[in-house]
Length: 429
Image (spheres, rainbow, N blue to C red):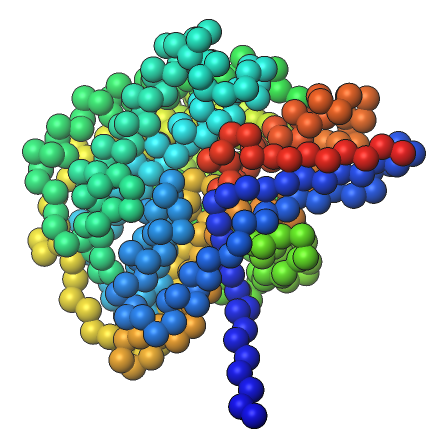
């Protein structure tokens, strides 16, 4: 009898629903389990046997909020495998589009999903009733990000104008110039919102994190760079798997990322800020200072402030790139498929998004490994939860649930697109 085995060693990650189980007995925290239970979608398996040029479009469907992250990392991985070097004009246009994703994603999270936690409100609808101007400003900022993605990528969700090697069509200069006034407004609006959020009552908390982020000698990293840690590691993107790994845990459909020595680590705004603060604009650094952020901020509840500083920076960077825009001609570089392995990494709003593809001589994908930020952050999320719960045992169950949801939303995990995603079970002995 013929035996068949189908093994999926690496699962694509999902936006969806999560649950948290906490057991406290005799004043001690016995169990803290953050679970992602939505079924896996097997994107890495879907890529096997597909033409490598399809990878950006296919993987962008992993996330409707940060498709540019997947498009960029996938494109870089294929380009590395094929020895492709994009032109400076194409690189600038990629970065400009990525700024749009940072703006819309950060504002969506900070103003509409995370701010209610600090305001004691259940959702953004409740905010609109007490502070309609805040919501109006947030919606306008988010639209600015969407407009950038649409002008460059063809549409705001799952852009269709991108390809390995560049773009199908370069936007007309007039379309880019038309964005300048709103970008100028966005800089001031993002700063004002950051200062507004700085007045929140932040819980006292701090952790000695291992920060992991891209670093770049010339600018604050968004679409490219080397991988660095706060412990001194500085490696090329294609050395990622030599230092980081993923493991399956029974409580989650998403893999958990760890360093090879077993340590949890943190990716995302706090990590980028800690490792790259010097590369922010002077005005963004001033906003960070005015918000009371430390040069290395270790209070995870203040990640909302770092996100808004990054929105200000993204508006400034987009304005700079838009003013200097030169349509790439041609809009993409020639591709010559060949056998090889390529890796790419970019800074999604939630942290580094790493892709690795093995490609055969026909240009088809043999194996694919995608490591998104939420899977990397899961072990650290659980560590944060345990630390905060131990410090919050005096709270009743309702207040403790609220605090736990805040802890998880500090990370803007992919499942946070549903504001009330969390089901909390607390057992007290």
